[in-house]
Every structure is written in C-alpha cells, then in structure tokens.
Image (cartoon, rainbow, N blue to C red):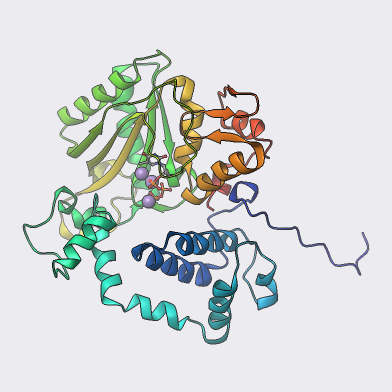
Amino acid sequence: PDATTSTPVAKVSQYACQRRTTTANSNKIFTDAFEVLAESYEFNEMEGQSLAFRRAASVLRSLPSKIQSLRDAESLPFLGKHSIAVIEEILQCGFSMEVQKILSNERFKTLKLFMSVFGVGLKTAEKWYRKGLLSFTRGLFPTGFLHYGDISRAVSKAEAQALGNIIDETVHAITSDALLTLTGGFRRGKDFGHDVDFIVTTPEMGKEEHLLTAVIESLKHQGLILYCDYRASTFDMSRLPNHKFDAMDHFAKCFLILRLDGSRVEGGLCGAEGDGRGWRAVRVDLVSPPMKQYAFTLLGWTGSKQFERDLRRFAQKERHMLLDNHALYDKTKRELLAATTEQDIFAHLGLQYIEPCQRNA
Ligand code: TTP
Ligand code: MN
Ligand code: MN
Ligand code: MN
C-alpha cells in the first residue's frame, strides 16, 4: 500500500445492525449529553426528536475514537444541526448549556427519580408530579419501592454469574434437558446491569411455559422470591411478526425481584456490605419461548434496544421483511423464514454476523 494515500474512512452505516459497537465508548462525553436530550424530549412526548438523539448517540458509540473536531462529525448519519451544535459546544467548553439546564430542571429531575422505581413509567411519574409530589413519600409507593435501594444499585458481573448458577441448579433439578441462556446486557459483555436476563426453555414442545412456572415455584420454596410479576403466554403462531419495536413479545415471562446471598457471589456482594445484611435484592427477567422460536428470542433479548430497533428497521426498509422476537417473515415470498441460530437470522437478512459484544449500539 502507498503510505502517502490516507486510508479511506469506512462509511458509517445508518443501521446499528451494520455497525460493530463494543462497550468501549470513546465518545461518552457526547453520548451522555445526547441521552439526556433524548430523555427530555421523551418526557415532553416529542418522540421524533427523542429518537433522533438516540440514533445520533448510537452512531457516536460505534466510532473507534473520540471526535476531535466538527469535521469528524459532519458526515455521520443522523447528526443533524442540533446535535452538531451540542458537539460544538462540548468541544469548546467541555459541557452543553442546554444539557446543564435540563439536568437542573425540577420537572426533569423529579420524573427521572420517579421513573427509577421498578414498574413506574412516564404516565405514573407524570401523575405523581402533577399531584405536586417532588420526592418519595413513605407508604405511597407500589411494589417497586420495595427494595428500592438495592434494585437502583447496579448488578455486577459476579452477581449475574451467581444468579445464573442458582437458576441453573433450579432449572436442571426440574428437567435435565432444559436450556438456560444468559441474555440482555451481560451477554453483550457489560460489566454492570440494572437487572439480569435469562431465557429458559426445553426441547419438549409445549412444555416451556410449564417449566417456567415450575422454576418460579422452586425459587419460592427456596425462599428466594421477594416479588414476582408473572405474564402467561399469549403467543399465537398464526400472527405475523410485528416490526414495531415497542410491541411486547408474547412468550411466558416473569419480572422478578430475587434475594441473592453474598455467600454465593465470588468476591462478595457489590457495595452492600456496609449494612451487614449479607444479601441484596436483584431484578431478574425470565422468558420462556418454545424451542422453535429460541433463536429469535435470543436475538431480541440480547439487545441493545437501539440494535433491535435498527434490525427491525433494516429488515423492513431494506429487505421487505418483518422481524420480531418470534419470527422473520418475508413479505415478497410470503413465507416465514426458519432459524435455529442467530447466524441463520443474520444470513436471512443478508447481514454480516455481529457478535453479542458488538451489539452495544
Ligand atoms: P433490558 O434488561 O431492559 O436491557 P439491557 O439488558 O440491555 O440493559 P440493562 O443492563 O440496563 O439491563 O432488556 C434486554 C432486552 O430485552 C432489550 O433488548 C429488550 C428486550 N425485551 C423484549 O424484547 N421483550 C420484553 O418483554 C422485555 C421486557 C425485554
Ligand atoms: Mn437487562
Ligand atoms: Mn434497561
Ligand atoms: Mn430485563
């Protein structure tokens, strides 16, 4: 190669599923600012602007190095006037005035605090804020407020591992051929998470939901369940995939708060030693798809959310296909495309395979 010609800069795709994004974010100073703006727009129900900043943040997360000048940013997809102006301000003074203003805004701060409670979304947070509440009042809050301190604290990799061991023992005591897979942020290689996500299923068709309820029963008997929100399956094979990202999937699942004993965790519990309890509460999600849908569920639950959004957008816009956590449908051929692995799904979509640790879009 000729040393005098500069290496061509690879064009950054507008789709996160065509980018490789590890947890090493060289542009955190910009992406943190963009996420605040996205959230603020979300709180004001300006979904378009919110998504624009989430997309811009996702593009910056995929870059191998930090943006040094406006010229580095101008040709990138989804970086419009507003986000460029924010970058310019941060490059010049190290922070964005607009973001600082949002962060000190009372409504923003209060909604964020309320929404940090498990099970509380924008609607409930708004309702409380309109009632004049500015902070938590004892006795007013629902289930999520139980163990609030614990579950608002990050879960470590060692804690996720320990929970994996406990659930693995539980599942295999029920059926020896059960399959347990760690998914979500920890599968993407994150060091910390807000919860731990698992898929649990069995090759015996139609037995997966029974397996999940048996697992819950067993965890209860072991005294490990502090809270359980179980959702029965509403899965219907005859329905076409729903590419809309916010549509929930229809498999049997449960949102749990589990009790994790420090003695089970290598190196001990994360930051909770001070109160001398020796245990902490952790949020755990379990989902049980039929084995036939396993690959789609694994791809869907591994995330990140931005990666999932763009997989579906790519499938629809570029391939005329519908993808969700259950299936992939080819609208041209009018048929469902089967898959037993994530690789199969990427291949159906004509995409290069992206490793889970490269999906931190
Ligand atoms: P989360 O656990 O919310 O997010 P995360 O694991 O990426 O990050 P964190 O460390 O903060 O926990 O969701 C994981 C993935 O599961 C996400 O891509 C969305 C997906 N998901 C579904 O597809 N259907 C569902 O019903 C739920 C609850 C999640
Ligand atoms: Mn998670
Ligand atoms: Mn999350
Ligand atoms: Mn989760």
